[in-house]
Image (cartoon, rainbow, N blue to C red; front, top):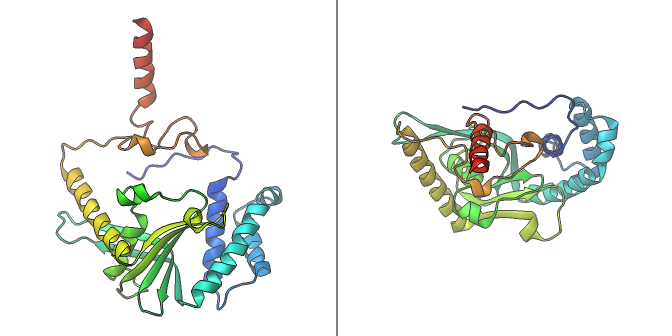
Length: 259
């Protein structure tokens, strides 16, 4: 349904806005002829902050984390450029075969590097939290494996079909220096297997929801729901309001009190 709750007016910029800001800076920097210096990245950040309406006080509040992210990106980008060609914010699509009615899977990749070997590496920037190994194995976080499937099938107009050597989720703020905590992903045969399993799981979900008898649950995997947060401070998920969970919960509590 693609329904999203509206932001409340007057809310101060938070992690989501900071993440969007850094994504724009990284996109522009990666598209440059060579890796920008830290000072050049700061200038790009100031330009994007002004364009986004991020006030000077807000910029100062986040300055330590932002500068840390810029320094990390400069080193990361320099290393990746030495290995191949970079494509940023690329759009891809794949119409799955054997699905009726047709189903088109789409993706927008933060960064795809075509390596000297001819294979590709796919990267996604995360402000803090990374998917866990269990979430990846159970296809709860299939973003990059499915992006890999699109790429392998030639679904990115700017990048011919090719194998995927690796996919990585990269933490861009609050990095610890420990690669096991700052990055997560798979490479080689593991990446290929994850890609195939994610596509198989997607096909099963499509078949399930093609069945008119299938219910659309507001909490299909409640254990993974994060409570609170600026975007849903009172509701656990965006769809709780549509599911009228407050009303049903209040009714159940009232009945319990009366017993």
